[in-house]
Length: 335
Image 1 (spheres, helix red, strand yellow):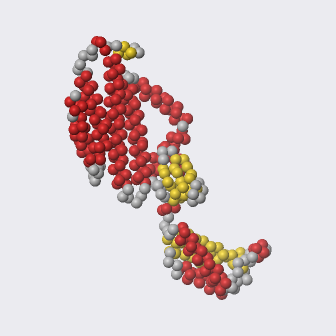
Image 2 (tube, rainbow, N blue to C red):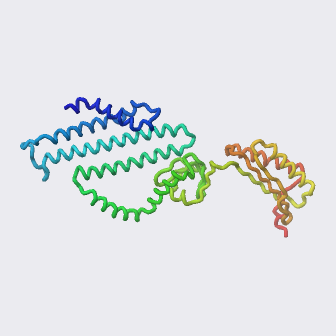
Image 3 (cartoon, rainbow, N blue to C red):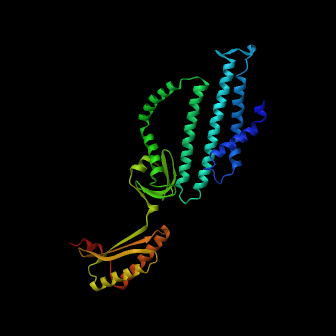
């Protein structure tokens, strides 16, 4: 009765003690929010724990000492109490994990990178699964008196068989850990892998979701993301443009020289072009080849395409100015 009457005060006090244990991680987080999150499972846990201790000291009435399905009523009630106690304890641990995840997500939201947010979600789900499995083992051990060692041995044998049959899934799971710790890419990065180009939207335990440049949604197994050659386009420092002009062999040497100099001057005046090269690259059958290559800073794709279009149009204007023509198909086929 005392536990029931004072449970709210005791539970809030215990919740405050738990908060102090994780206060270093919980800087800047309201204590009240933590207490409100865990006070309910602490309430139930305290009442069940004290009740078990108190009732265990009493003599079970003989009039109630009946057998139901080969089990004494006292044993059934004790088993139910233990089950509720264990479930409440696991519930409390899950609430604490949720709170810690809220703290870490709050800290990660202040960073530009989205990888920390994805990492928090990943490990929150992972530790929840571990705690639930731990709770099931406690229920079997203390609730039903099952020999856990026998269970673990059986699970190890079954686990080995399952591991052989689900080898690919396990490889994807291991690859997900490699992605999170090695950081070849993170959520929000623009990547190219196995002829797929797009934005990373989610990194899961088994696969990675990519929103492609065709606006489709592709799921790629994590093992392929790790084993394949992956180009993280978000980490590049420049965008490259290349033009190979195959000019007619009727072009004069003086015009070619003035043309290459004019194109170089054109590229030099562009604000977003960092480095460039324009040169008379090759002499082929009835064709003069002029290579034009330039590297822009990491401007948006739309702006880069506008720049390329502007440069190409001005190159055509310079070709008209210096009376330069592209080699015709007939000229290229001449021997």
